[in-house]
Image (cartoon, rainbow, N blue to C red; front, side):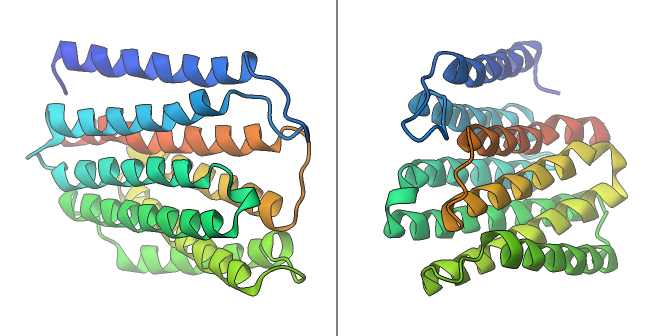
Length: 244
């Protein structure tokens, strides 16, 4: 585990993270269309906070250890996600920003999948049959969600197929987490985090593509997303406990 100073720093950042998300909503104001009640810049800053925590986990203890590649790729994936969050600001009004956000978030999911595969190898927990079975199930679920809740028949074809590819990719990312947790049950928060990410993006896709702008949908999307990311990042601590 990181030194007492390091772990106290991480827990302090976690407390700041929780307070920042709460303050962004409590001190925010309703948007004109009623979909948001938060301070956008403060909310997005919590994504950067998670990236800092992820790099601290790697730098303070995991670097060079048994789960070094897993931790490094988690930090890289969270950092790419933060960049995607910045790109997605205003994506509802810009096709270019939306496509760019899909591409960059897709890259983050690829990196997360590589992190789970690296962790499985480092823990001798590779089960390809489990991974392929979970991927098949998740892809079927993703296709149903895309067709029923995300695809807009009257919308832009490129955006629709971009959303399809992205939905399938995040489904495979979840399957990777599932394989790792199948072998190391103590890492179950990692799978929960990946699933929350999947749920958040499904709701976001419904909002952006189907234009289903129900009240405070942005807060639901963000809180499920950021909680999922936090669980993924803090799986570093669970990984440390497993190898020690």
